[in-house]
Length: 115
Image (tube, rainbow, N blue to C red; front, side):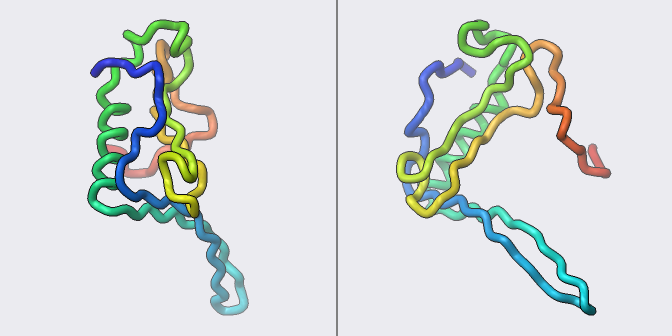
C-alpha cells in the first residue's frame, strides 16, 4: 500500500458520524453512556471501508520520517461538511500501533477476549 502524504476529501457519497449521550434510570440508579452512530449510503460506507483498509494495509515503517516520525501513528481526519455530513462530529480514524516500536497508546485498554 502506497503512502498518501496529502489526505482529505477521501469520502464519497453520504456519511454521518454522530455521538449520542444516553441516560437511563433503573432501580433508582442513573446509568449514562455514549454511543457512536455511523450511517451512510452505499457510496459513503464503501469510501469509509476503503480508508480503513488503507490504514490496515499501510506499512508505517516505509513512510519517510518527515511525513510520519518514529513513534507516530498514521491517521485520517474526517471533518464535518468536508468528508462528513454537516451534522457529523469531527472523527479521526487511525492505527493503534506506532511506527518503530509498534506500541499502543498508554490509555488503550484491550478487550478481555483478544484472539
